[in-house]
Length: 608
Image: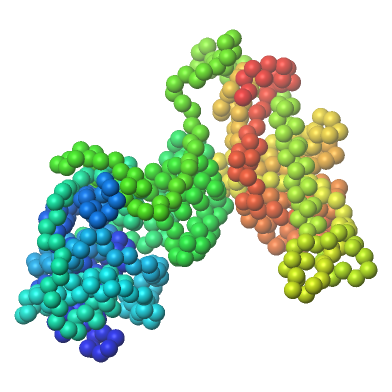
């Protein structure tokens, strides 16, 4: 993108001066700035940075790609108050200095040092829109609504204008300044300016090396994204151009690997879709188009769990070039030390600890194999059965889903109307408040639901990669226990006791009354099914004695199943699995398989 245009009122080229407005710290402006500088190759590059920090800034740029922090005491601030200035590779002002050195241009630090910088309480559109609108249209849209000014802002702009007017009169000057100072500086450049009464030097300026683990808190753009930019800027190839949504996806996928390695659990595809929607909504609530690292971490914690949220934060804060030891003093800073109005997010990791935990005296340790393969030798393979305490938990979960589905169906049949002669089924407070201006009371009427809820099918994973090869159908042992069909990992690949295997459900079906279900996985009536979840759904429709069948999954069944259900006199009540608590779902995904009924008496000693 080039800023060169005719010298009209809307142009950013004024004589020998070309103005390039940026949002400090934002990646998209660094990309456009580097392209413009490499295309125009001006003789002078002026940056909106204080001349009193010139030496520190140049030393910090020399250290790149390692990040640095400039520290100096603030004389006009509160007692013992210090100012930290992170020097990041994705910051446009840092990029201006780096590229100016590459093209051998003179660098001018044009900002006057009056003390605390005047506060400009304005808001700009999300910088990601530059990728789609272009920089010119972005700047034009911003300038349509002028930002409020003050005497301090005008004095600040006048000091910048004085420095620019003193630049080489025979050279082209490329001015990089903040977007909110563009119009004040343009106005100040219309007339000669006097030298401002600003300090020419500052004592106590230090350059520090931030510890790698604190970069996520102190950097404007999260370090994972900045590292992708660092890889791009050397070649300037569009194929390597860092794109925020793609970087977010890469971050989440990389964190998944760390999460699976630490916990042994996987992130489902429906959770990935929910993460995308959640981060988008968090960004919109904050007035942006894309989410920052804190929002991405909050979404990961809410959709999956705290362990995954931790891995997302750690991955997003990773920046390989940063070293713990170097030529500068290393400091571990917090966000509160560098920025004002920071937000906090609490993560509680639930991982096994290597140290011994305190336990009551006399508590027996969990039994272990005396030698590898001891428990595998005790499997006779004549029969299998379930563990009764787990059966009770699964049955309770099935009844909970039946009630939830019935409540959803009931809410769909509620009708609200103004009160006339009867309160019907009660006053509808929500509708009454909503129509308060009408001075009317609204009442509710519940229409009766035709039919009850029968079979329940729960799909945790559609098993597209064959992770759940074990296909089983077993019958209830008493009148209150459902027949069950499920697919899972092979339980005898992970033995927790003699003849006791531990597996993870991919999906299961519950159907009452018991002792009616033949093997679902070999039944030729279900050959129409294209996957394991569809076979369970067909069996649920077939064996349900009630009209409504509950289907819990990441996505609804194919439309043809609605037709099949209608011909059987059934109705599918779909519940998105994302509406259920991820923490509770984990409790129901584990199943233990015993190789005989005799194992039940000793199973409690091995199952936890």
